[in-house]
Image (cartoon, rainbow, N blue to C red; front, side, top):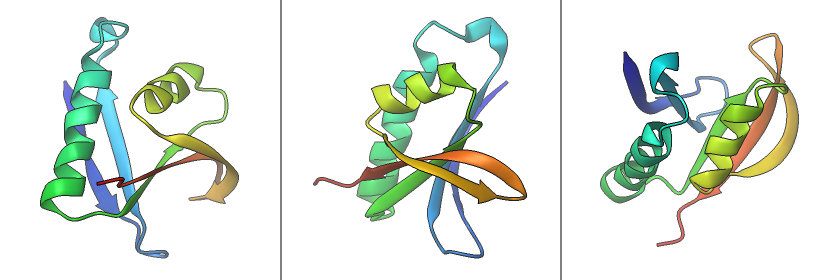
Length: 93
């Protein structure tokens, strides 16, 4: 199973990017490729200007994927009653 997409956060109206891949395909570049295409789609077709991503502070593999596809770390925030590392990407087109 794999998925990749966006959700509008109800409390802030921010656009959140998320992805999920079965562990059997981890490390093969699928998450990076799919993530890049998904972000392009959001910026071009939906007109998003800014997208955030949330990650558990100790989920280093996820942090690496987010950085590879252009996200920049913005700090830690309590969200959904959990501490999350916040990443941000802006549309540069």
